[in-house]
Length: 71
Image 1 (cartoon, rainbow, N blue to C red):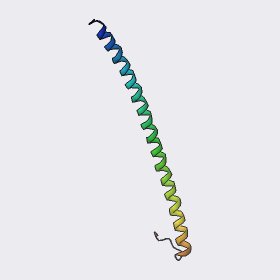
Image 2: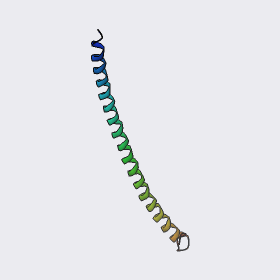
Image 3: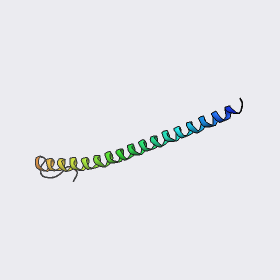
């Protein structure tokens, strides 16, 4: 009976190890995808900031006396 326990234990260990490896791979992929999404969001925010600054400069030039406030 003792000889069956190591075989079952070895099979269980191998199964759990492969399951944990798969889970780690999926988790790593999800984190990489989230990092890419955050990078894209940061780039988009920089573009939106530039557009907003340009619109503000145009508004201040028109209604603020012809010169943007930031010089």
